[in-house]
Amino acid sequence: MPADMRARLGQADLPNLVLSASGCAGAGRELAQFIDVARVGALISKSIMVEPHTGNPAPRLAETPSGLLNSVGLQGPGVDAFLQRDLPWLLSRGARAMVSIAGGTVDEFAELASRLSDAAGVTAIEVNISCPNVEDRGQVFACDPGAAAAVIEAVRARARYDIPVFAKLSADVTDIVAIARACVTAGADGLSMINTMLGMAIDGDTMRPVLASVTGGLSGPAIRPVAVRCVWQVREALPDVPIIGMGGVRTGKDALELILAGAGMVAVGTAIFHDPSACARILRELDDELAQRGIDRLTEVIGLAHEPRTAAGRRLARNPT
Amino acid sequence: MPVQIRGTVLTLRRVDAYHALTLVAPAIATKFRPGQFVTIAVGGPETSMLGRRAFAVHDVRPDHGGTVEIVFEAHGPGTRWLASLRARDVLDTVGPLGRPFPIPRDPSSCLLIGVGYGSAPLFGLAARLRERGSSVDYLLGGESADRVFGALTARRNGRSAAVATTDGSFGARGQVTGLMEQIIREARTDVIYACAPVPVLREVAAIAGRYDIPVQASVDVPMACGTGVCMGCVLPVTGTDGITRIVRSCVDGPVFRADLVRWDDMGTIPFDALGAPGWQPARGAESRYAG
Image (cartoon, rainbow over all chains, first blue to last red; front, top):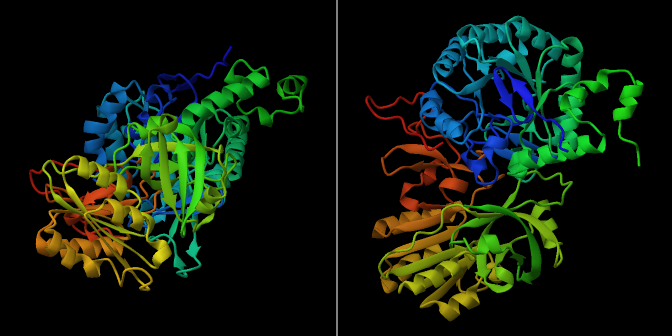
């Protein structure tokens, strides 16, 4: 019998805990050619901004070992087009939409939260605080506990009470627990971690940076150990806060690793570029992993790696064969 | 609609400087239209290469239920891995993807321009054009004789076939664009189809523009996913409404009307593109966006 994979996100019951990460599933339509989007736990949208945004010039991508550097620069249609076109389409397909929002000022984040709250059918809001704060010399919100908290507080105040607000954290900080704590104190209902990590590649032939924007965000299995570490540390410090784990998940076993570290939900990102049916496949593989260990309910293993090796723990561990 | 399948390698052979790989892929072959492409995951199940590799389809055949052939150059780790495969190896393949070449409704004089292995998709297109009563002239090019793909086929089934190589080892010395105007005048070309590197496409578009000949250009920009989710393969293209948008080559192309591509602004965000920094919507204009 398949294990119970259900998860709860605010008021919404998700059929399973495997989500698609922000910026990796397009508007949903692209993936619907390959998988049933209603069977993805939830689709986290590309980060929506108030106005349409062209993003950065090409080249925007560089392949690195087990990773991908990108500097797409939040290209998107703006909140009006999202609400008119993309959100209704997702809902018509029976999908659940967690909407990622991005802004350059606290007010922009607040405006987005308010606009999304007026629309029906937003399951949750993910706040992409890895944006430069134009009011503070481009300092990234996610790197400063005070700035991160200011954004979360404004979003929480403007978002409808029944829409959970998740803060998406960056691992490019000295102390991720301090940022996590600041966001939770400011009202975050949960935490998404991690965002891409700042990286760079230089072309040995042209002897110039590969990306037009010089630096970019590194994603893919290359950063998975960092994601596991961040989820672990935050779970240790804030055991009751729901966590969506993301960063380099490519197989069911990778998803299980983040769950054992403390994530109650897992989002699949760059793997979707490599395999458009990755969300469905990873869910299937996770089910197999649980079956092999005789686990009936996924909730049994969330954060299990933190527990000392008990008899119960040994029962769940897979025999090395 | 594209499908994701496990395609079995039927044959892999050397064609001069390139490799031709034939896959058994009935679900892709039956839906394919010339100009579309497939993507392949390279490096096996534990690969460290996360980007899919995109290839224009050279040929589809009905044998084995439907096969798809691609032509590529082994110039990086992904394509070198592909070149090392053997018959019966299995590849994660997605296709057919992208917008195909539009075909003129009435019989027309068509000039097909291809550079390097870029000419691969032109022969399936030519077959379709001839079915509709159009005539086909070929203009192929490459750095050297071993990098001109399909010259024999072009000679066999084209009304004419001209070749230019950079080193002069085959046909005229120089670029394909050097021969273009003469062919246009002699063949009274109505439509041009071109698959070539971006600088050549820009030149083709400029020359064709002087003769008022429409060009359908297949743009070769690097892609990571091929399905429209990664936003990597973007270029500035003006819509028929006059508004420039940053569009994805994989879903809005790879075939574009050459007069609508902002060739001189490739690799930039033009200041007047929809959503560019400082961009303001025209008063009363509906906000439409292809992103």
